[in-house]
Length: 497
Image 1 (cartoon, helix red, strand yellow):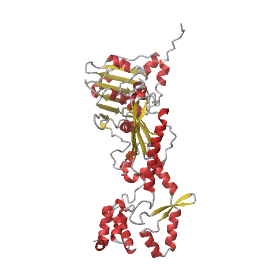
Image 2: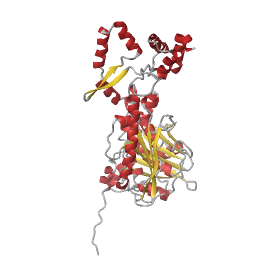
Image 3: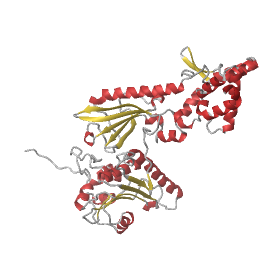
Image 4: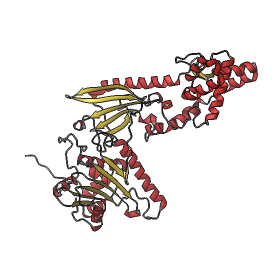
């Protein structure tokens, strides 16, 4: 017979350790929204109310709700083993999320729930009480202010309210009149809304969609793949066999910045920016787990691969294989899948590089003439440099009229002082901040420059038809086709006719 001792963890010590799982407020809220979705909610309302020390956060849903027995089990730390088979639509795993996510943000967790056949039940974890008594005493008495909160937020319909009180890690001042503290609190609300829009974007769009609101406003879904954009490329779409099942993998190359409006570019960059958002997006039952990572496959984040994004869909029972953590924020690819995932990553990274190089090449795409760009990329030994294209109509006309001399010297000075390091630095800090050619420029200014180009090309003996053809393929005038035709008709009307 094996001898043993029962060594129970000290509640007053463990409860504080459970607060240190590393949740941000937005990831903690997302964990609770998982529970609402698993409970078949069609509407999830996240409320954040500032009131100094009395501030609170509530997650309200119209799901199936719980009776007293189920609520007691839901409040038990580690209620379900991660090895226990789960329903295919279950977004939980460890049976810890409700508790650890809530404890990370508050010292008093109240859960109130009702089903279609049972009346309101409530349970409360008060961490100060647990520490005071030195035991896992789950409170069953519903305080009057919490009951009033149920009536305000939910009413008598089936569903659940998870209420966080005593937000010791979020409230920076006990004074409800402290405007700076209030602003900080509602900044967190904005962060929560953006995060939920990313994590649950596939739940709030399409057939069977649900409604998720933060402080009364529907969250805006964030599609990391820009699937609706006409220039987004689907590179691969396949299913990888693993342990008798198929894992869906679909890879995309997003549009180059020149194909996006500034608003589209900023939105698609996500909360971390384009360079950090590249890589794999791992979903578990359509819920985003990892948002932009090369999963330790040996690839680096690079500017040229920032357009590469790969969607990977996992069933819930593969959590262990992918080493998904308690916070549902980390995943690691099983060794058996690494070669195939590397193959897909290499293909989509190469395509992203090709898009960048194609858009960045100067005078290397087909056109109806030799003049397309104002700048040329040249190689000097092992170095890359940039030169003004002296065959450009305006540049050539200016140099001819001036006979070289000071104008040539000025052009050479510009070439030797292109602020490449500064351009690279600014692009890394904010890729969407660089102005596109003639962006926010008055049409009359563009028209004036275009008129000078047309006249210079005409003086050089280029026919009207050829001028139109070249301008329609010459950046930046290729973005102004109507203006090109207007100016050419005015300047070269008889010749074009």
